[in-house]
Amino acid sequence: MGTLLLVFAAAALAFANGANDVFKPVATLYGSRTLGYRAALLVAAGACLLGALTSVVFAEALIKAFSGKGLVPDAIVADPAFAISVGLGAALTIMLATVLGFPVSTTHALTGALVGAGLVGAASELNLGALGAKFALPLLVSPFLALGATALLYPLLSRARRALGVTRETWIQLPQAGEWIPRADALERGLLADPATTERAGEDVVSRCAQPGGPALALAGGGAAAAQAERYSGSVAGVSAEQLLNAAHVLSASAVGFARGLNDTPKIAALLLLLPAFGSVGGNALVAVAMVAGGLFCTKRVAEMMSNEITTMNAGQGFSGNLVSALLVTCASRLGVPVSTTHVTCGALFGVGLATRQARWKTIGTILIAWITTLPLAALLAALLYWVLG
Image (cartoon, rainbow, N blue to C red; front, top):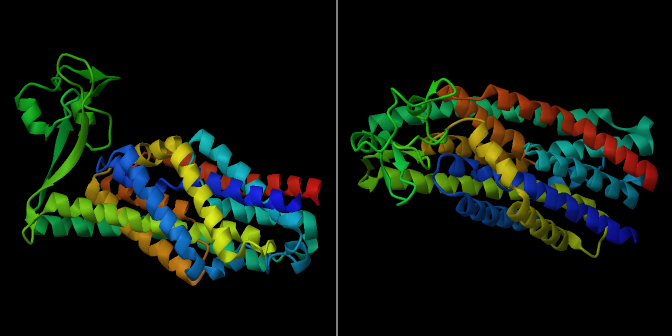
C-alpha cells in the first residue's frame, strides 16, 4: 500500500508540475504570435520529454538535493510517509495554483513541503543552514538574474538588428480569410476602424493595440476583431530576417523546455529513491510521462497568463528572454543548483516588459504574491499529511 501511494504521490506531483510548467518555455512563441497555441504546446511537450529523459545522465546532484538528505535526519528521509507527504503537499499546492491560472514554482513548493514535513518529523534537527545555502539563495537570486540579463540583452540585440538594416512593422490577420497583411495596408484599404472615432473604455483602440500580443485591432464596420503581430523585413547574410528570427526563437524556446525537463524531473524523481525497483531510469520515465500529460491537458489558464497578461512582446523580445532562461536553467541543472524554471522564465518576461516599458505591473504583483504563498502553503499541507500518515 505504501509503495502504491508513493508512486501515486510522485505521479501526481509530476502531473501538476507539467500542468503548471510545461508551457512556460514557449509562452513567448504564443505571446508574440510566432506560433499558435497548439503548435507551441507540442514544441513544449517534445522538448520537456527529451530533457526529462536526458536528466537520467546529467542531474544526479538534484536528485540527492531533493531527497531531503542533509536537510532532515536520514531516518526521516528513509520513511515512505515523509516522501508521500512531501509529494502530495507540493502537488496539491501546484494544482491549486494551476486551477487559478498562477505560474508558480514546483521547486518552491517542494522546498516548502520538505520543510513542513521535516518540522513534523524532526523539528529540532532540521538543518536550516542547508536550507538557506542549497535552496533559498538560488530561488531568490535567479529571477533577478533573469530580469536584469534580459533587460540588458534585448536593447543590445535591437541595436544589432537596426545596424543590419532589419526593420519591423505590425501585421494584422483578416479573420475571415486568415490572411496576414501589413497594418499600414489595412489602414489604406479602410479595413480597420478609424482611430479618430473608435474608442473602447476611453482609450483609442488602434493606438492601444499598437503592440503585438495586445488586444486585437477593431475592424471597420464591426464584426470579429483582427489579430496582430510584429514581423521583420530585410535579410541577414542573404537569409530572410523573419525566417531566421522565427527559427532562432523556436530553437531558444525548445532549449528552455529541454532545460526545464532536465531541471525539474530529478527533483520529483527523488521521491522514488525509496523504491529501488524503479531505478533512476524507471523513476525518470514515470515522471516524464506524467509531466507531459499534465502539460497537454491542463495548462491553458497558465499559458494565457504567461503569454498575454505579463507584457506584450514580439519575436525578438521573446527570443531574448528565452536565450537568457535557457542559459541560466541549463547551467543550474548541470551544477546541481535548484533554481526555479518558473522564476527564471517569469523573470525574463519581467525583463522584457521593463526593457520595452510594456510591463503590466498589476499582473506581475499578483504573480509575486502567488510565489510568496507557495512555500508556506506547501509546508502546511505536507506537515498535515505527515502528521496523519507518520
